[in-house]
Figure 1 (cartoon, rainbow, N blue to C red):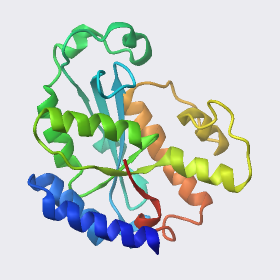
Figure 2 (figure 1 turned 180 degrees about the vertical axis):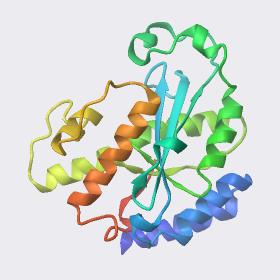
Figure 3 (figure 1 turned 90 degrees about the horizontal axis):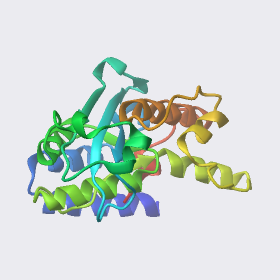
Length: 228
């Protein structure tokens, strides 16, 4: 009940204070469906590749998204965007495989943010280690003077952490990484650190988690939604 009250209060305030139409619609979507089961909610699995892990100094280089509608993943609706950055990707290219020449054909940061907000105005964001992705998005929204308000998402890492802690499992270093979590649900391991592939991996993980938790028809959005 406390989480439901907090979510209702928070979303009302965000709707009231938002000046950008797409993000206001996004908040309204969350508010009107906060008590609905996940099976009745449109989700958008998201992954971002960056030049590093510090949103204050590092930059986003690519974003992958894939919708989950009626508890089904829709690969044909998946989208991927490259983002022009200031300077070079440097050694981070070893991790994500995106090169400087790839980004020369990318979109500007503001263009990608406007595209992303349009995609999620009638959907709920899902990410693995969501706070990190949300911090990068929020910093970019502030830098481009688009939106100073916080975002929310379903975090598949947090879900698995809670599940393991309830079982009194010792959480070893690396045990909550995306592929490590997938292994616990007997999901195949994909090559990591491609934004679109990782978005798909996150979407599959969420559905597997929900199945183990009693099914997407029995878990409400309010039970899973988290703030940054």
